[in-house]
Image (tube, rainbow over all chains, first blue to last red; front, side, top):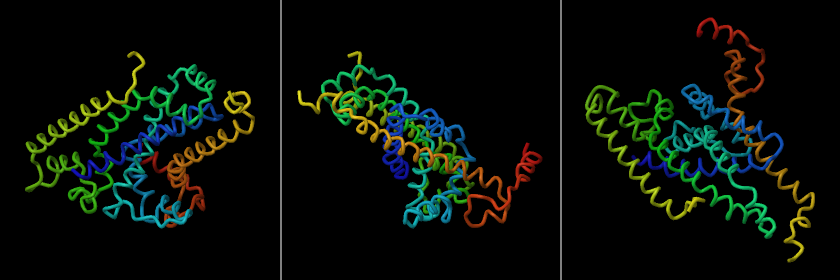
Length: 234
Length: 75
């Protein structure tokens, strides 16, 4: 359970901030932005089990990622073997599949009327001021949508963790560090036969509890949203 | 209104180009980082088993038979 909340609390903001940053860069009318958009979106097409295996191998103790860190003088950990580094590894892997979020933010940014920026420029607004007082308020409905969908997706995280845990699946990865809610549910339902396995009743109950948790979190977000989301219509 | 608040006077060429250059470099770096895993997979698809040990980008010999094998076995 704590594993799930860790991922929700760390991964969701990282995904939102990084994808918003990339979308703002892509929205600057720089040359080659179509190519960059395509490259950023490319991993999303490749998603799936094969890509997780690719990442398991890149984040291996002497894999590509640690070699890259060596170049900038950091001694990388054995990502998916040490309990405290498995979840950061999952976050690094997750930010590779950011394409859809970037695309939604880009669409939101394109929907902001140009006149607002022109008016602000005439009033002598700095680019930081434009971002703070035009981009963010006008984009707030998109940000809310992204927060809610990312939260739900992170609560339901399973496939990647299951593949990375691999032969350790019964114990939920090294030191149970990847034992996310749905992972635990799966082990209850389809895991080894015994006191912890093949308990369909318990697993179904867990699924309903997760639904209730996600519903509660989403309703809380919608309630919070009344304080910060700006809709043009009202 | 002071001169610095007037957009036409403030937007000297270098003041427009430098931030855009930085943004472009940032974007290019990010794009490269997103591409590296894919390129690595491409490089490995052409490696012989002996090239898999250690760490190199360019295989010592382009092992096209990997694709031959994939087609005859997997498809």
